[in-house]
Each structure stands twice: as C-alpha cells, then as structure tokens.
Image (cartoon, rainbow, N blue to C red; front, top):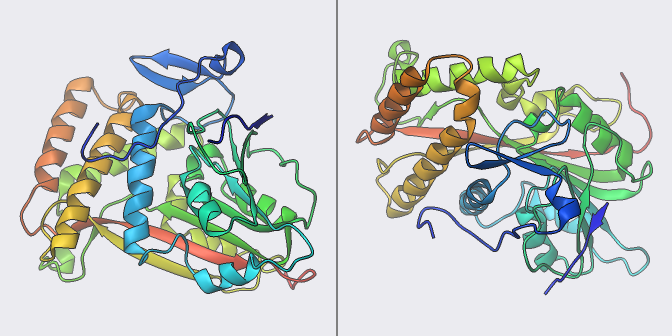
Length: 336
C-alpha cells in the first residue's frame, strides 16, 4: 500500500512534523495503551509508534550523522558510485523498517535522481517530503514487492525488533539487490559500552554501572520471551559474513562509540552525550511495559532512577556502540 500524499518542543529531541493520522482506514493500524500509540499488526515489533518515538528516531539519526563525520552511511564513496546517474535507468533504494523515513529523506536530498522507497508496518510519514520519496506499508517478515535483482541499495537501521530472525532481513536484501548492489545496515548494540580511556580495570568493568547493565539484561530477557533476538545487535556484520553465497566477504563493518552523559572533555562530546542521555531515557520509557513483565513495577522505577544517576556520573566514560556495515552483492552465486 503506497502512501504518497502532499509532498510539499522537547529541547533534547528533534521533531520534523510527524503526521497525526486522521484517515479512518489508517487509524486502524494503531491502538492506544496507557497513553502510547502502538501498531495493531501481527509484527513482533513491541515499541510505541508515536510522536515521542519519532522524536527519538530523529535525534538518534542526527547524532549518528555527526559521529559519522556528516555521512549518512559507511563506505560513502561506494554508495555514491552505486547511485550515480548513468542516464539509462532510474536508480532505486529500499529502506526496510523506515519509520518516519528520516534516513531516506536526507538521502533523497543528496540524490534527487534516485527513487527512495520506505517500507514499514504503519504510516509514519511526515507532512512534507521530496517527490522522489515514497512510503509503503509492508511487513518485512514477508518478501517485499520488488523482483529479484532490481534494487541498487537496501538499507535497514534499528530493524532487529521488527523480525524474529535477523537473517530474514539479510536474505531479503540479497534477493532484491542487483549484482554489485549494496546492503547498508546498522544497529545500536543493546548494552552499555565504556570509552577506551575510562580508568576502570578490566576485571571490574563487568560490575561497573550495575543498574544500566541490569536494565539491558532484563530487556534481553523480555525481548527473548517475544522471540526477538537482541544479541544479534552485538555482531550484525558477523551475520552478513555468513552469507558468502550472496555477498563478498568480509563485509565492510564499522563501529561508532557515542557518549552518554556530559563526561566528555570536548564541548561537542558533552553536547552529544547530553542529547544521547535523553535518547536512552526515552528508550527506557518506551520499553518499560516490557520490563514490567519481568520485575515488579516498584523495582523498575527504582532501577530507572539508579540508571539516571549512573548516566550523570562525572567521568563515567559511558556510551553505546552503533555497529554498521556495507555489504556488496555478488555477481552470481559464490561458494558456500
């Protein structure tokens, strides 16, 4: 189902005009629980899909663009080559689990000759977007409408909760990509990370910031009960490297450390860490209903308060890792 209409605050979060869906047909995709809006499809995706979440998506996106030196992906020169206008065919990019399409909308400004298609389970399109941007409603657990070998670039960011098996995303990317086409993927590792210069001996790191570690451990358990494998985020390039028949391996993988809190020595790092602290706080609010199935509400509240204190620790070295890769589709079928 295509959604192509008119193309035409919280200080920590970025808001670019999420549509409040009024159409009765589209409203059927949503239900409100405890003041948050959720999808009503059969997708396993467990988080709200409303303005606070879209603001979080936007803020994460803008932080990552700074961390990646203004780029929207790794291996940007290869992406430019893949999307170069050859004067013969229209280049196509498919963004799986697009959300409000922030990534593809920014890409569409850089590549106006390319058609960008964002796929997701619910309508979250902003009010205005470029003429070469299209939103479509599809569940990425099933094959998309594109034929084999017809797409130039496939992108998937923060998509692991949308499927019960991340390999499904990789397989679909391999199916629809042209030979030498690119699969760009990235996930936030679902755990805390420490800056290499943090003066915590390795033997003590496992017990450092215990409440944040407990938060992610409890979240892993809660997601696992829903058959969502969160540990895939720790090594997504490893999953891609297993598909030697479809991609040249090893794939080009990079990991970016993003600070949380204001402990950084640089002004840019402090500003980024302040915003990222807001991102993690909002993420915790969004997954809170999942945690209530694992531990009592009072314990969740206590843990969240303790996590806030840990995020505010001076000199903590706290951060998260965004892991991403660029995989190139083989010409033909490679060895098993």
